[in-house]
Length: 147
Image (cartoon, rainbow, N blue to C red; front, side):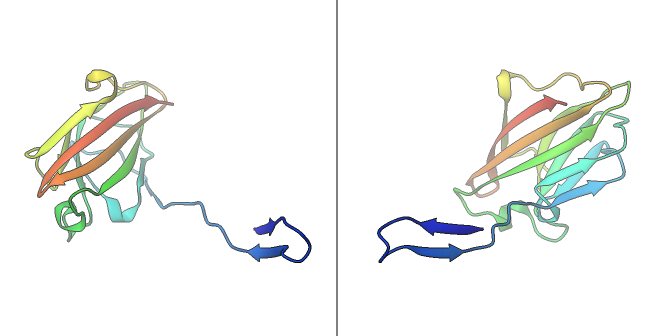
């Protein structure tokens, strides 16, 4: 990318820079399990490409060896998207855990209510914005969008 700064001929210059606007997606050829752990360090987008076969609890951690509590500081936030492929019978996310527990996790769903169904024959995208408010204490803003 070249950026040209405009001015008089004595002060005109050019800056060259490389811009990367991608993020890592963890694409998994499976469906969410009944308690599906996702690790943020593998990507902020988690895509399950096989049809969901059951409702699930999402469990969010930083990695297999690091808790989200130890990876985040108070006042930090992260956003994670989980893409769940749906067949003719649709399923949905029933609960949100962080580091294996719902204790200290307050989840607010867009529109005021948690989903009660999935959307058949498409992809449901669940987005979670997690704000660490105290040690092992989080506010989660969650949504479900049908594609």
